[in-house]
Length: 426
Image (cartoon, rainbow, N blue to C red):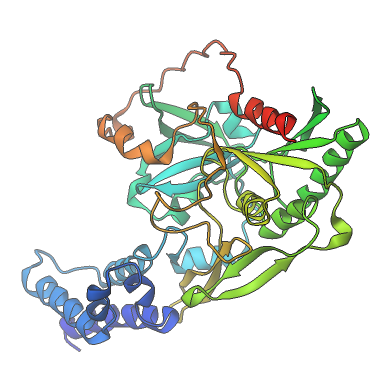
């Protein structure tokens, strides 16, 4: 078979694999205008474009291409046009994914992709990233010598992982500060238990840090604790709570809402594929309640926010949530690799997903907006990048330790407002 024929088979196999798994390109076409949809969703039109590219590769490329790299690039391109959480996995990555990664650990942070860069959604209190000085809202420009914008989110996150006790250098961009390289020692970060206290006006405050497995029960204990102290109103603080499971978020919402749907999952064509309903026996507090959110409230925590909003359970004070939460399914491929594809989105009880493409419309807006301004908003990342000159970390000298700034006592205006709202409610 000729070189062109081999290359065509490799590229076409990648495209066909993509079509076979995702059913063509409707997921991409649905993001475009109605007029463009017909062309985008026409397989013949797409294959003509591929053939044109192949012609240029054969006739105009300066060297003989590495066909394996071309095929991998084609498959990565298929998923990169979908969403940050869908990825093509190489055979090595697929084997690691299916076998688990018990020998690797992270740095105690939840990540997302913003403007193509690795964005820190939340940092586990007391974890490796927190101890090293990584903050919520940081933009990770480089992971070691690899630019985060040059790899998929899946790859970027896994570059932060490694052997326990090993270190990873992260070049951090932060608004109002010079770029800095922070070395983080990898290690386990145990989810912190919720904190609770009783404020004036018999208002209990429960601060949640995680919605990982088992955390809903710990939230239940914290809520019961303030109730026993005499709380008649409760503020649930969900700021910087990202990650976790939808089931845990539903269980926490159920502590305050005893009937009806609490969350849904939405599949293809925006059809609700699963509904999570309240269990009346799990309701423990029927008094006045409010939530506090910020831009780093994401995923399972957004299920709680959406349930409160749909059921009109109480005020949501703070900032618009991040907009995340989806399910991925692994599809093995005959070549040994695999595809991680988003097959469902987490959504409100009425079926409105938290996650989407447009940063101006995703997430959940608060009923009472109070901006604190001490966390870097994803919408400001592009502006931050424009002000930062690109720099190859391989050319950097050993990083100079960043002086520890003096702690600034800042009034928590978001929590204060939530308490005021409850105390002033009739």
